[in-house]
Length: 100
Image (cartoon, rainbow, N blue to C red; front, side, top):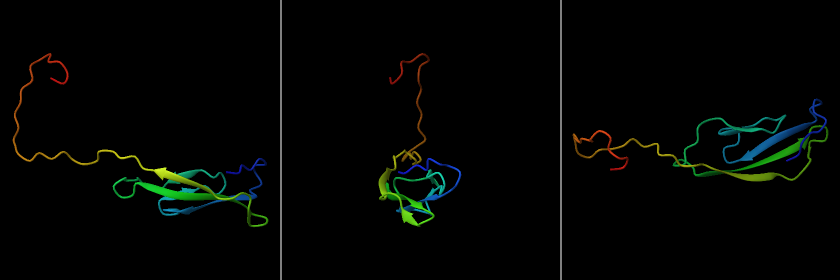
C-alpha cells in the first residue's frame, strides 16, 4: 500500500472493497488502517477477501493497483459444555498429580 509522505495535506484517500467492506470492516480514509466493526465468528464465515486502494484526491485516480488480502478467522471453542446424563460425582484426593 502507498504511504503519503507529505502527511497533513490530505491529498490521498484509502478505499476498501470486498467481503464485508463497510459492514464488517472499515478503513480509515486518511491512514489506511483497517478495523473490524464487530466480532468475527469462524462458524459464520471462515475468511474474508478484501481489497484496499489508495486514490489521489486531486485527480481521483488510483496511485497503485489494489492490494488484495485474506483475513482468516481463527476458531475458538465458543460452545457450552453439554452433559448428557447427570448428576456426576467424583472425588479427587488432595495432592493428586495433574491429569490423573
